[in-house]
Image 1 (tube, rainbow, N blue to C red):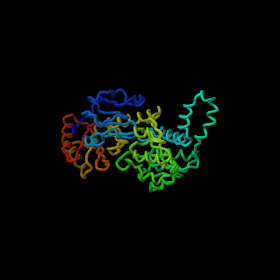
Image 2 (image 1 turned 135 degrees about the horizontal axis):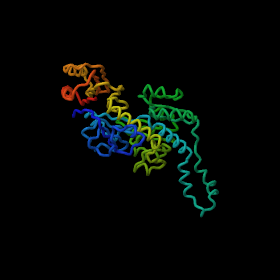
Image 3 (image 1 turned 45 degrees about the vertical axis):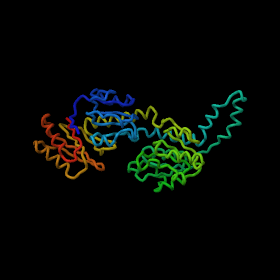
Image 4 (image 1 turned 60 degrees about the vertical axis):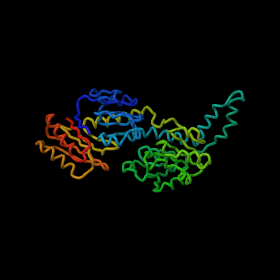
Amino acid sequence: MEMTVVEKQKTIQVLNPISQKGLDYLGEDYQVSEDAQGAEGILVRSYNMHQFPLPENLKAIARAGAGVNNIPIEECTSKGIPVFNTPGANANAVKELVLTTLIASSRQLFDGIEWAKTLSPNNGPIPKQVESGKKQFVGKEIRGKTLGVIGLGAIGAKVANDALELGMNVVGFDPFVSVDMAWELSRSVRRVYDIETLYQDADYITLHVPLNDKTRTMLNKDAFQFMKSDVHILNFSRGELVHNSDLKEALEMENIGKYITDFPNEDVLTMKNAIPIPHLGASSQESEENCAIMATQQLKDYIETGSVKNSVNFPDVTLSPFRHMRITAFHNNVPNMLSQLTQIVSKFGINISEMMNRNKENVAYSVIDFESSVDSSIQEQIESEMMKVNGMISVRILG
Protein backbone atom coordinates (compact mmCIF):
# COMPACT_ATOMS: atom_id res chain seq x y z
CA MET A 1 0.00 0.00 0.00
CA GLU A 2 1.71 3.14 -1.19
CA MET A 3 1.85 6.32 0.89
CA THR A 4 1.04 9.45 -1.08
CA VAL A 5 1.45 13.20 -0.72
CA VAL A 6 -0.94 15.56 -2.52
CA GLU A 7 0.85 17.74 -5.07
CA LYS A 8 -0.25 20.88 -6.88
CA GLN A 9 -0.52 19.48 -10.38
CA LYS A 10 -3.24 16.90 -10.72
CA THR A 11 -4.22 14.70 -13.65
CA ILE A 12 -7.72 13.33 -14.12
CA GLN A 13 -8.25 10.45 -16.53
CA VAL A 14 -11.57 10.11 -18.37
CA LEU A 15 -12.57 6.62 -19.53
CA ASN A 16 -15.80 7.74 -21.21
CA PRO A 17 -16.99 11.01 -22.71
CA ILE A 18 -17.88 13.34 -19.82
CA SER A 19 -19.98 16.49 -20.17
CA GLN A 20 -17.78 19.58 -20.50
CA LYS A 21 -19.89 21.33 -17.85
CA GLY A 22 -18.56 18.85 -15.34
CA LEU A 23 -14.96 19.04 -16.53
CA ASP A 24 -15.07 22.84 -16.36
CA TYR A 25 -15.56 22.57 -12.61
CA LEU A 26 -12.03 21.21 -12.22
CA GLY A 27 -10.40 24.51 -13.09
CA GLU A 28 -6.89 25.34 -14.22
CA ASP A 29 -5.09 23.25 -11.58
CA TYR A 30 -6.17 20.04 -13.29
CA GLN A 31 -5.25 18.29 -16.50
CA VAL A 32 -7.84 16.06 -18.15
CA SER A 33 -6.36 13.18 -20.13
CA GLU A 34 -7.16 9.76 -21.52
CA ASP A 35 -3.72 8.58 -20.40
CA ALA A 36 -3.59 6.59 -17.14
CA GLN A 37 0.02 7.45 -16.30
CA GLY A 38 0.14 9.60 -13.18
CA ALA A 39 -3.64 10.01 -12.91
CA GLU A 40 -4.81 10.99 -9.44
CA GLY A 41 -8.48 10.71 -10.29
CA ILE A 42 -10.65 8.80 -12.77
CA LEU A 43 -14.00 9.87 -14.19
CA VAL A 44 -16.01 7.03 -15.69
CA ARG A 45 -19.50 6.21 -16.90
CA SER A 46 -19.97 2.71 -18.33
CA TYR A 47 -16.37 1.65 -19.06
CA ASN A 48 -15.66 -1.81 -17.58
CA MET A 49 -12.78 -1.32 -15.15
CA HIS A 50 -12.56 -4.88 -13.84
CA GLN A 51 -9.60 -5.70 -16.09
CA PHE A 52 -8.24 -2.15 -15.96
CA PRO A 53 -4.87 -1.62 -14.21
CA LEU A 54 -5.33 1.08 -11.59
CA PRO A 55 -2.68 3.83 -11.82
CA GLU A 56 -0.14 3.81 -8.99
CA ASN A 57 -0.90 7.38 -7.95
CA LEU A 58 -4.69 6.98 -8.11
CA LYS A 59 -6.54 8.72 -5.26
CA ALA A 60 -10.21 8.29 -6.23
CA ILE A 61 -12.71 7.16 -8.87
CA ALA A 62 -15.97 8.96 -9.62
CA ARG A 63 -18.75 7.32 -11.61
CA ALA A 64 -21.06 9.73 -13.47
CA GLY A 65 -24.10 7.60 -12.69
CA ALA A 66 -25.56 5.51 -9.88
CA GLY A 67 -24.52 1.89 -10.57
CA VAL A 68 -20.93 0.86 -9.88
CA ASN A 69 -20.95 -2.74 -11.13
CA ASN A 70 -18.34 -1.79 -13.73
CA ILE A 71 -15.81 -0.79 -11.04
CA PRO A 72 -13.70 -3.22 -8.92
CA ILE A 73 -14.93 -2.02 -5.54
CA GLU A 74 -13.09 -4.61 -3.43
CA GLU A 75 -9.76 -3.88 -5.09
CA CYS A 76 -10.27 -0.15 -4.64
CA THR A 77 -11.14 -0.59 -0.97
CA SER A 78 -8.06 -2.73 -0.36
CA LYS A 79 -5.92 0.06 -1.85
CA GLY A 80 -7.66 2.90 -0.01
CA ILE A 81 -9.29 4.34 -3.13
CA PRO A 82 -12.79 5.76 -2.62
CA VAL A 83 -15.37 5.15 -5.34
CA PHE A 84 -18.00 7.86 -5.74
CA ASN A 85 -21.30 7.71 -7.58
CA THR A 86 -24.04 10.23 -8.30
CA PRO A 87 -27.32 9.00 -6.80
CA GLY A 88 -30.24 11.16 -7.84
CA ALA A 89 -28.41 13.12 -10.54
CA ASN A 90 -30.18 11.20 -13.30
CA ALA A 91 -33.36 10.50 -11.32
CA ASN A 92 -35.62 12.85 -13.25
CA ALA A 93 -34.47 11.53 -16.63
CA VAL A 94 -35.09 7.91 -15.64
CA LYS A 95 -38.41 8.78 -14.01
CA GLU A 96 -39.65 10.47 -17.18
CA LEU A 97 -38.75 7.48 -19.34
CA VAL A 98 -40.34 5.01 -16.92
CA LEU A 99 -43.64 6.88 -16.96
CA THR A 100 -43.42 7.41 -20.73
CA THR A 101 -42.98 3.71 -21.44
CA LEU A 102 -45.54 2.75 -18.82
CA ILE A 103 -48.19 4.79 -20.65
CA ALA A 104 -46.96 3.82 -24.12
CA SER A 105 -46.97 0.10 -23.38
CA SER A 106 -50.37 0.29 -21.73
CA ARG A 107 -51.82 1.97 -24.81
CA GLN A 108 -50.12 -0.53 -27.16
CA LEU A 109 -48.22 2.37 -28.72
CA PHE A 110 -45.08 0.42 -29.58
CA ASP A 111 -47.01 -2.34 -31.36
CA GLY A 112 -49.18 0.19 -33.13
CA ILE A 113 -46.22 2.13 -34.49
CA GLU A 114 -44.55 -1.02 -35.81
CA TRP A 115 -47.80 -2.05 -37.51
CA ALA A 116 -48.28 1.40 -39.05
CA LYS A 117 -44.82 1.21 -40.64
CA THR A 118 -45.93 -1.89 -42.58
CA LEU A 119 -48.87 -0.17 -44.28
CA SER A 120 -48.62 0.29 -48.03
CA PRO A 121 -50.72 2.30 -50.49
CA ASN A 122 -50.74 -0.85 -52.64
CA ASN A 123 -53.35 -2.20 -50.23
CA GLY A 124 -55.63 0.82 -50.50
CA PRO A 125 -55.81 4.28 -48.94
CA ILE A 126 -53.69 4.50 -45.80
CA PRO A 127 -56.37 6.28 -43.69
CA LYS A 128 -58.83 3.49 -44.48
CA GLN A 129 -56.29 0.83 -43.47
CA VAL A 130 -55.61 2.71 -40.23
CA GLU A 131 -59.27 2.89 -39.30
CA SER A 132 -59.89 -0.78 -40.01
CA GLY A 133 -56.77 -2.01 -38.24
CA LYS A 134 -56.53 0.19 -35.15
CA LYS A 135 -58.96 -1.94 -33.14
CA GLN A 136 -56.22 -4.54 -32.56
CA PHE A 137 -54.28 -1.97 -30.54
CA VAL A 138 -56.94 -0.93 -28.06
CA GLY A 139 -55.10 -0.36 -24.79
CA LYS A 140 -55.78 0.56 -21.19
CA GLU A 141 -55.62 3.88 -19.40
CA ILE A 142 -53.38 3.99 -16.34
CA ARG A 143 -55.68 6.16 -14.23
CA GLY A 144 -57.10 4.11 -11.37
CA LYS A 145 -54.65 1.25 -11.96
CA THR A 146 -52.09 0.14 -9.36
CA LEU A 147 -48.36 0.67 -9.80
CA GLY A 148 -45.99 -1.38 -7.68
CA VAL A 149 -42.64 0.35 -7.07
CA ILE A 150 -39.83 -1.89 -5.84
CA GLY A 151 -37.11 0.33 -4.41
CA LEU A 152 -38.00 3.77 -3.03
CA GLY A 153 -34.70 5.57 -3.52
CA ALA A 154 -34.14 8.73 -5.55
CA ILE A 155 -35.71 7.35 -8.74
CA GLY A 156 -38.36 5.10 -7.20
CA ALA A 157 -39.70 7.90 -5.00
CA LYS A 158 -40.02 10.26 -7.97
CA VAL A 159 -41.80 7.61 -10.04
CA ALA A 160 -44.18 6.87 -7.17
CA ASN A 161 -45.02 10.51 -6.51
CA ASP A 162 -45.63 11.39 -10.16
CA ALA A 163 -47.69 8.24 -10.74
CA LEU A 164 -49.99 9.44 -7.97
CA GLU A 165 -50.37 12.75 -9.79
CA LEU A 166 -51.42 10.79 -12.89
CA GLY A 167 -54.23 9.21 -10.91
CA MET A 168 -52.66 5.84 -10.18
CA ASN A 169 -52.72 3.95 -6.91
CA VAL A 170 -49.16 3.28 -5.78
CA VAL A 171 -47.82 0.44 -3.66
CA GLY A 172 -44.18 0.65 -2.57
CA PHE A 173 -41.74 -1.92 -1.23
CA ASP A 174 -38.33 -1.07 0.21
CA PRO A 175 -37.25 -2.49 3.58
CA PHE A 176 -34.14 -0.29 3.54
CA VAL A 177 -35.61 3.08 2.57
CA SER A 178 -33.55 5.94 4.02
CA VAL A 179 -34.94 8.66 6.27
CA ASP A 180 -34.26 11.28 3.59
CA MET A 181 -36.16 9.33 0.95
CA ALA A 182 -38.99 8.65 3.37
CA TRP A 183 -39.47 12.40 3.68
CA GLU A 184 -39.50 12.73 -0.12
CA LEU A 185 -42.16 10.05 -0.54
CA SER A 186 -45.82 11.04 -0.66
CA ARG A 187 -47.94 9.82 2.23
CA SER A 188 -50.40 8.50 -0.34
CA VAL A 189 -47.95 5.75 -1.32
CA ARG A 190 -49.06 2.56 0.41
CA ARG A 191 -45.96 0.84 1.72
CA VAL A 192 -46.02 -2.93 2.08
CA TYR A 193 -43.51 -5.03 4.00
CA ASP A 194 -43.73 -8.26 2.02
CA ILE A 195 -43.04 -8.14 -1.66
CA GLU A 196 -45.62 -10.82 -2.50
CA THR A 197 -48.40 -8.38 -1.57
CA LEU A 198 -47.03 -5.91 -4.11
CA TYR A 199 -46.85 -8.65 -6.78
CA GLN A 200 -50.48 -9.60 -6.16
CA ASP A 201 -51.89 -6.05 -6.15
CA ALA A 202 -49.97 -4.40 -8.98
CA ASP A 203 -51.15 -3.89 -12.56
CA TYR A 204 -47.69 -2.50 -13.35
CA ILE A 205 -44.40 -3.20 -11.56
CA THR A 206 -41.29 -1.05 -11.85
CA LEU A 207 -37.84 -1.98 -10.50
CA HIS A 208 -35.52 0.56 -8.88
CA VAL A 209 -33.06 -1.49 -6.81
CA PRO A 210 -29.29 -2.00 -7.07
CA LEU A 211 -27.83 -5.24 -8.38
CA ASN A 212 -26.30 -7.35 -5.63
CA ASP A 213 -26.32 -10.93 -4.42
CA LYS A 214 -29.74 -10.48 -2.82
CA THR A 215 -31.45 -8.85 -5.81
CA ARG A 216 -29.87 -10.83 -8.67
CA THR A 217 -32.66 -12.73 -10.55
CA MET A 218 -35.17 -11.58 -7.92
CA LEU A 219 -37.85 -11.68 -10.62
CA ASN A 220 -38.09 -15.39 -11.36
CA LYS A 221 -40.75 -18.09 -11.63
CA ASP A 222 -41.38 -17.90 -7.88
CA ALA A 223 -42.13 -14.19 -8.19
CA PHE A 224 -44.14 -14.47 -11.42
CA GLN A 225 -46.59 -16.91 -9.86
CA PHE A 226 -47.88 -14.16 -7.55
CA MET A 227 -48.44 -11.61 -10.34
CA LYS A 228 -51.47 -10.78 -12.42
CA SER A 229 -51.52 -12.43 -15.83
CA ASP A 230 -51.61 -9.06 -17.63
CA VAL A 231 -49.06 -7.24 -15.47
CA HIS A 232 -46.51 -5.02 -17.20
CA ILE A 233 -43.00 -5.18 -15.71
CA LEU A 234 -40.63 -2.25 -16.24
CA ASN A 235 -36.93 -2.76 -15.58
CA PHE A 236 -34.82 0.40 -15.69
CA SER A 237 -32.35 -0.76 -13.03
CA ARG A 238 -30.29 -3.75 -14.22
CA GLY A 239 -31.00 -6.60 -16.62
CA GLU A 240 -29.62 -9.19 -14.21
CA LEU A 241 -32.45 -8.54 -11.76
CA VAL A 242 -34.60 -10.81 -13.94
CA HIS A 243 -34.13 -14.54 -14.56
CA ASN A 244 -34.17 -14.69 -18.37
CA SER A 245 -35.38 -18.25 -18.94
CA ASP A 246 -38.12 -17.87 -16.32
CA LEU A 247 -39.15 -14.58 -17.91
CA LYS A 248 -39.29 -16.11 -21.37
CA GLU A 249 -41.50 -18.93 -20.15
CA ALA A 250 -43.81 -16.57 -18.25
CA LEU A 251 -44.27 -14.39 -21.34
CA GLU A 252 -44.86 -17.35 -23.66
CA MET A 253 -47.35 -18.93 -21.27
CA GLU A 254 -49.03 -15.51 -20.80
CA ASN A 255 -48.53 -15.70 -17.04
CA ILE A 256 -47.46 -12.05 -17.28
CA GLY A 257 -48.38 -9.43 -19.86
CA LYS A 258 -45.33 -7.44 -21.00
CA TYR A 259 -41.72 -6.82 -20.08
CA ILE A 260 -40.16 -3.43 -20.82
CA THR A 261 -36.44 -3.14 -20.21
CA ASP A 262 -33.69 -0.61 -20.70
CA PHE A 263 -31.16 -3.47 -20.82
CA PRO A 264 -31.77 -5.61 -23.91
CA ASN A 265 -29.72 -8.75 -24.49
CA GLU A 266 -29.74 -11.66 -26.91
CA ASP A 267 -32.50 -13.43 -24.97
CA VAL A 268 -34.79 -10.44 -24.54
CA LEU A 269 -34.70 -9.54 -28.23
CA THR A 270 -36.40 -12.83 -29.14
CA MET A 271 -39.00 -12.87 -26.36
CA LYS A 272 -42.70 -12.52 -26.98
CA ASN A 273 -44.18 -9.26 -25.63
CA ALA A 274 -40.78 -7.92 -24.57
CA ILE A 275 -40.05 -4.28 -25.40
CA PRO A 276 -36.29 -3.54 -25.55
CA ILE A 277 -35.08 0.03 -25.08
CA PRO A 278 -31.41 0.77 -25.89
CA HIS A 279 -30.35 1.95 -22.40
CA LEU A 280 -31.81 5.43 -22.71
CA GLY A 281 -32.89 5.90 -19.09
CA ALA A 282 -30.26 8.51 -18.22
CA SER A 283 -29.63 9.62 -21.80
CA SER A 284 -30.74 13.22 -21.61
CA GLN A 285 -28.54 16.27 -21.93
CA GLU A 286 -29.60 17.48 -18.49
CA SER A 287 -28.92 14.13 -16.83
CA GLU A 288 -25.46 13.76 -18.34
CA GLU A 289 -24.58 17.27 -17.24
CA ASN A 290 -25.92 16.73 -13.71
CA CYS A 291 -24.02 13.46 -13.31
CA ALA A 292 -20.79 14.97 -14.65
CA ILE A 293 -20.97 18.01 -12.37
CA MET A 294 -21.78 15.94 -9.29
CA ALA A 295 -19.07 13.35 -9.99
CA THR A 296 -16.44 16.00 -10.69
CA GLN A 297 -17.30 17.98 -7.57
CA GLN A 298 -17.00 14.91 -5.37
CA LEU A 299 -13.71 13.87 -6.95
CA LYS A 300 -12.20 17.33 -6.66
CA ASP A 301 -13.37 17.84 -3.06
CA TYR A 302 -11.81 14.55 -2.00
CA ILE A 303 -8.49 15.21 -3.72
CA GLU A 304 -8.20 18.74 -2.30
CA THR A 305 -9.76 18.47 1.16
CA GLY A 306 -10.33 14.77 1.87
CA SER A 307 -14.11 15.25 2.02
CA VAL A 308 -16.16 12.16 1.20
CA LYS A 309 -19.70 12.33 -0.15
CA ASN A 310 -21.65 9.58 -1.92
CA SER A 311 -18.89 6.99 -1.74
CA VAL A 312 -19.90 3.35 -1.96
CA ASN A 313 -16.89 2.10 0.01
CA PHE A 314 -15.88 5.02 2.31
CA PRO A 315 -17.93 6.62 5.09
CA ASP A 316 -19.30 10.08 4.34
CA VAL A 317 -17.24 12.87 5.95
CA THR A 318 -17.96 16.55 5.24
CA LEU A 319 -14.85 18.65 5.79
CA SER A 320 -14.20 22.36 5.56
CA PRO A 321 -10.97 23.60 3.94
CA PHE A 322 -7.96 23.24 6.25
CA ARG A 323 -5.63 26.09 7.25
CA HIS A 324 -2.25 24.38 7.52
CA MET A 325 -2.03 20.63 7.09
CA ARG A 326 -4.36 17.64 7.19
CA ILE A 327 -3.82 13.89 7.47
CA THR A 328 -6.46 11.45 6.29
CA ALA A 329 -6.19 7.77 7.16
CA PHE A 330 -8.30 4.93 5.77
CA HIS A 331 -8.17 1.80 7.88
CA ASN A 332 -9.99 -1.21 9.24
CA ASN A 333 -12.73 -0.37 11.71
CA VAL A 334 -10.92 -1.48 14.87
CA PRO A 335 -10.87 -0.01 18.41
CA ASN A 336 -8.26 2.50 19.57
CA MET A 337 -7.16 3.50 16.06
CA LEU A 338 -7.60 7.25 16.49
CA SER A 339 -5.64 7.30 19.76
CA GLN A 340 -2.76 5.47 18.07
CA LEU A 341 -2.68 8.07 15.31
CA THR A 342 -2.72 11.00 17.72
CA GLN A 343 0.11 9.43 19.71
CA ILE A 344 2.22 9.34 16.55
CA VAL A 345 1.51 13.01 15.87
CA SER A 346 2.31 14.01 19.46
CA LYS A 347 5.73 12.30 19.21
CA PHE A 348 6.76 15.03 16.78
CA GLY A 349 5.50 17.84 19.02
CA ILE A 350 2.67 18.83 16.68
CA ASN A 351 -0.54 20.33 18.02
CA ILE A 352 -3.84 19.03 16.68
CA SER A 353 -6.54 21.59 15.91
CA GLU A 354 -9.31 19.18 14.97
CA MET A 355 -9.92 15.48 14.41
CA MET A 356 -12.74 13.12 13.55
CA ASN A 357 -13.43 9.48 12.80
CA ARG A 358 -16.27 7.92 10.81
CA ASN A 359 -16.92 4.28 10.00
CA LYS A 360 -18.78 2.29 7.38
CA GLU A 361 -19.23 -1.38 8.18
CA ASN A 362 -15.73 -2.86 8.55
CA VAL A 363 -13.71 0.19 7.45
CA ALA A 364 -13.19 3.66 8.91
CA TYR A 365 -11.83 7.05 7.91
CA SER A 366 -9.91 9.32 10.30
CA VAL A 367 -9.00 12.96 9.75
CA ILE A 368 -6.48 14.99 11.77
CA ASP A 369 -5.84 18.72 11.22
CA PHE A 370 -2.58 20.31 12.42
CA GLU A 371 -2.26 23.78 13.93
CA SER A 372 0.83 24.40 11.81
CA SER A 373 2.62 23.03 8.77
CA VAL A 374 5.61 20.70 9.00
CA ASP A 375 8.44 20.10 6.55
CA SER A 376 8.48 17.19 4.12
CA SER A 377 10.90 15.06 6.13
CA ILE A 378 8.55 15.12 9.15
CA GLN A 379 5.60 14.35 6.86
CA GLU A 380 7.37 11.26 5.56
CA GLN A 381 8.15 10.06 9.08
CA ILE A 382 4.54 10.55 10.20
CA GLU A 383 3.24 8.66 7.18
CA SER A 384 5.72 5.87 7.73
CA GLU A 385 4.75 5.50 11.39
CA MET A 386 1.03 5.52 10.61
CA MET A 387 1.35 2.93 7.85
CA LYS A 388 2.91 0.57 10.42
CA VAL A 389 -0.23 0.66 12.58
CA ASN A 390 -2.08 -2.64 12.40
CA GLY A 391 -5.13 -2.34 10.16
CA MET A 392 -3.97 0.76 8.27
CA ILE A 393 -4.81 0.74 4.53
CA SER A 394 -3.73 4.17 3.25
CA VAL A 395 -2.51 7.54 4.53
CA ARG A 396 -2.59 10.91 2.77
CA ILE A 397 -1.11 14.24 3.76
CA LEU A 398 -2.73 17.38 2.35
CA GLY A 399 -1.13 20.79 2.52
